[in-house]
Length: 230
Length: 230
DNA sequence: CCGTCCTTTCTTACGACGTAAGTATTACGG
DNA sequence: CCGTAATACTTACGTCGTAAGAAAGGACGG
Image (cartoon, rainbow over all chains, first blue to last red; front, side):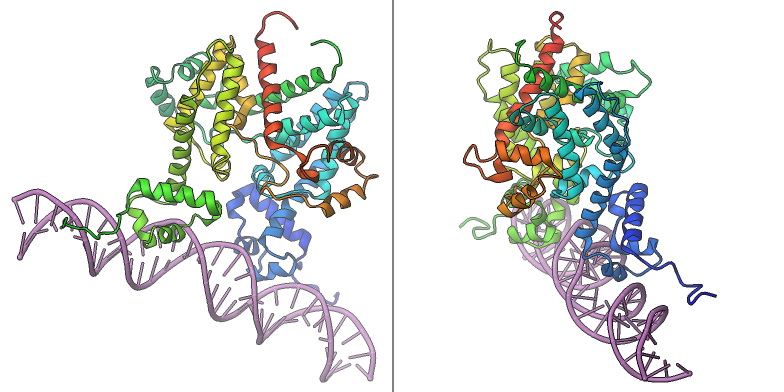
């Protein structure tokens, strides 16, 4: 009865962004092509350009959206107050990480493009605040931010198996066959691997490794912040 | 006199790789397109495919070449023996870094593609060896490798100004104008910046920051390796 | 009900990319 | 000199981002 009852839902910048992110989540960043995204929306490619300047702006907006998602997620954590700055910062970062785990394409984008956007600044300002709360000088806190790097945002680029591909047994076998050339690596694999259920070179529990590295840095910063105790 | 005196220098896999790397060094990775690279060699695009399976293989070979360059650079450092494992590892990593600084495109590639290639394995095996030399268990050394991440190879992806673009004064001014919204960030900038000659947000000395983070991690690992002294 | 005018979408087309398929050239051993 | 294998070129296809402009839709005053 309304003026345009059977009209299609109409495009909007929000819907474009939302669909783009969803598409990236499901099929990877490479699948986010203008034509693909348009098809997903039941629309022609060029129609997107009314809502988005170009693809670069689209990608920027995508990470900005994720960053906002992180900020809201982080804002809901009960701060437990006297748990100490380290615990608070730790949880904040792990929360950010949990959001990024739902958007595996985001880290790549974060590293690729400049991101001095308000949500990012907000996030980093809070991190910095927690470091200050720990008694770090501005100078030390600044170094600390650099030391954390992308870890402050909840991710590290894993050098091996970037695609999350499983390292197969034959690769491991091939490696073990060269025990003479790579004694330490093969030695490590022989000892460390197979302890838990995870397989072979994919033995590494990403989450555990992330937390280990994070704590290592936070502890190191705390130690540097203490005036006493060499 | 000779059978083919005036022949053009002829293509070869080595020359293709060499030119590709040089091209990336000079004009960035985006400039490394098959047609571009071919033109650089005075040749047609498809001619490259006789020496290289496809572009992916080309990129893989490029990082492999850089990795070999790192390995030879690292092999020439005088180990100074009783300087301690930390100092040795430190220098090894900084040497790797010095090579990567000549190939700014390499880090991106390193993070993008799987690189379980012999030169990389060789490198990491040596790093692992030094950690072991420091008395780390295989397990701790393994964690340490993860904690180092790309730092073990001599680089960290800088989150801000990924392109090495200078942060201009207006950006800084805009940020300072929001001192109420970002108190810590603006506070830090007011205090830390302008101490050295470097400008504004580009105040960060990448090399110094890298070394700070590296030492933080190495010290942390050393501490964990010591049985005593909590 | 009709024209007018934004707003939003579609059509068509261009140049750049990686590369498949097939053809021409070159070099060299006999 | 010629045949054969190695090397380089030609042509063409499908995909990408997107420039330019035409068409469709809705809103609104007459």
